[in-house]
Length: 66
Image (cartoon, rainbow, N blue to C red; front, side, top):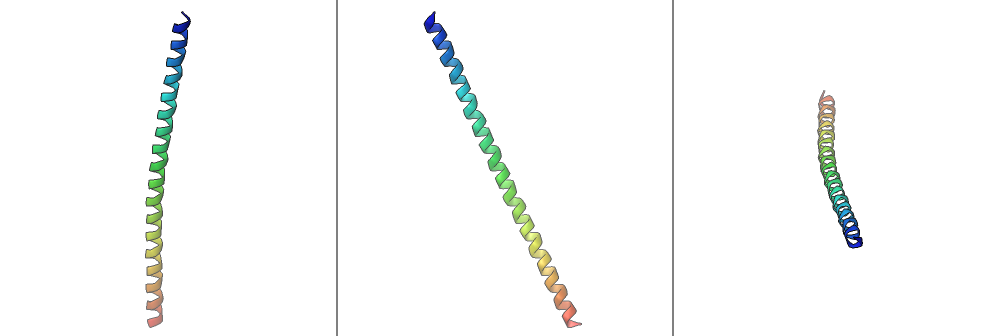
């Protein structure tokens, strides 16, 4: 009977470990996805800033010619 109780406890604890590992892996995958999305957003913002700077430069050159 004692062995059965110990065995049940071991199985229950092993299940918790698997759940914890799965949760950690899922959390890491979510963080990785967030990081990749952040990089994409940063690239888009940098492109928009570059375009805005080009437009400003073109307007300044056009105003100088007048």
